[in-house]
Figure 1: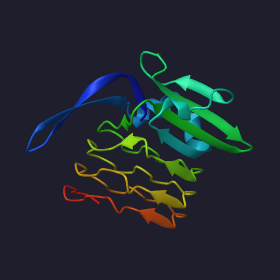
Figure 2: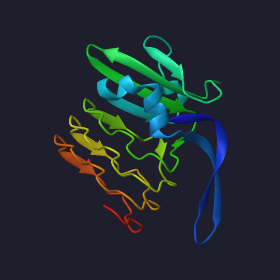
Figure 3: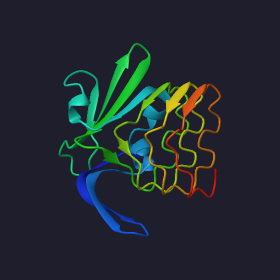
Figure 4: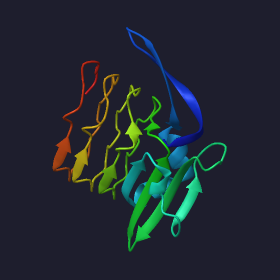
Length: 178
């Protein structure tokens, strides 16, 4: 689900024009969690940032998560007692590819998510994105661009602790499944 270092062009088809945007691109959620599967069960906080300076310089576990291992996209895990925090950062917003489905599914200990550095403007599928995030109490997705999303099914399924959910910026005009 996470990040590819080589910058590539996203091509978005719209009825009005063709757009090309150069941004760091997320790899699919399966690629990230297959590499770091143990993180899914123990992470309490995930922060996606648009600046590499958000990554602490020392301590914790740091890994290059770009395909060419050049340091342009980093993941860093820190621990505070039994709480684990993952930072994902690149210089510039991280653009999600069209496969961020199940991105946080089964992150049962996840309590805090900060996705301000995530660009979802080309995303088409968000189904099961937060499914079974049983510890998540507050979620602010007001900054998500969902104008191209067709499938939002089961997005919050099993989020039994969720008390506050901000979807104020959601555009569901293309959603077929919710």
